[in-house]
Length: 556
Image 1 (tube, one colour):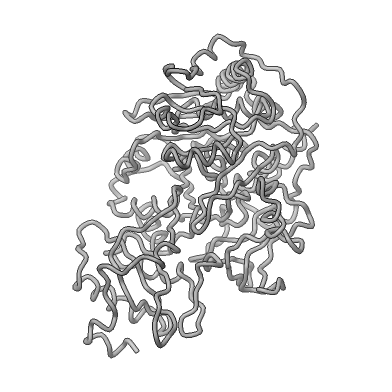
Image 2 (cartoon, helix red, strand yellow):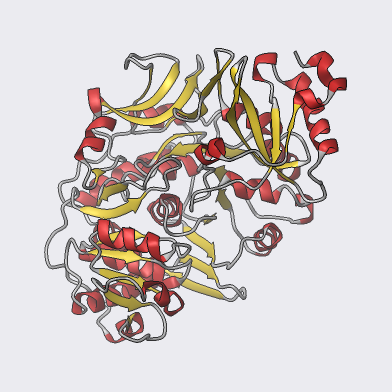
């Protein structure tokens, strides 16, 4: 019965893929008591289903292909093997793999077993891993033999498993091939049982432990499926690494909810040209990438790469309008922005077939009733983005594991508060302003770093930008921009002057960038800019608007 209700909700959204209003007004979350997405949905969908499900490329470009039926059988073998290795319902498994076949098999197997997956990027250092092992109460670790050494100095409080060749004191998942291709669960899975435990990549504080259930992500990502506009015939590439939530969003639940195939490349180092060559040589129809990737891609001549794409999307941070325009000019496609958090599924998006408002992240997606709240908690048109909780939306975290006070703080007053500030226009479109702790005042005006960064990125010399407040004796604070230059440009006074001259007619006096510094940008492990670190960083190679007297006529 649970699978029937899930499929009814899924099919409703697929039918109304291009009719936003009908989808938003008519969608209802399936209310599930027991549900195991891998058993109740995936395995049933995969039965005798030889359609492509997974298309992977290794570092040398060699493909690995699997159908839905193959993934179902191989994940059953792995679930049986993990059970024999001692994995039980509720056990926490730290999963640290790249975009390789065992990653998807372990995810499916863990769901079937009722284990809790702690996703971890392969970029983590031993100190990060120790934090996850301890605070995550991890009992099993699955990684590759090349990463085993990262655990050598850590307390061996876990059972170690490798996805490839055996390592000393680590068993190999290769032994799963001798186990049966059918799997019988020990008990039914409650939809509210924990499934995922994410260590968030906070820009200001120690990572929080975000806990999701067998409903909140597998079912909740029906909203993400709708935003992406995926269909069963699609081959979808989400450029992301396992370890943060966007990978589960668009490399697992959203595409397979639609019956679409997943594409992924296990590159060692990201190269924009290689991505474009991959797009040109494979029948990829749908692409989702973070803003950093899109900014890297437009450094190349996109018209040199004929693509099969019909749909483009971006999430992770707001995408600047200049990047959207460059892609549209080259490929004739609009990048549709979307918004969500590790704590949620996709909340806001520009869904297919709907009018796009430049700079907007779209409208609330089916299943979510959103509000903007002022500092006193009253609804407004410029305020903190929040989810109304009165209709119990599915795509929301269980809570912050081990931190009931934080859970209570973010869900007080009948709202889940995102900590992000947005503006709503009369047509319901939402525009991102910034994190509540990133927005700042200069000369008593509230300024959005994102708005200023969008203007900066229109200059051809600028590849990346981050704006923070800098102390000023008269204005209290002024906008300062940290800039990463595009290839072919040199940091120095001439470049700084050219950028200031470019900005003057494009920004109101109270918004003007007053200081520029050329520097690399510190980022979280998931690629988000650490603006708080930039605020504390001592000034190095910086230039002030006042350093250029010939520009002062327009720089009051």
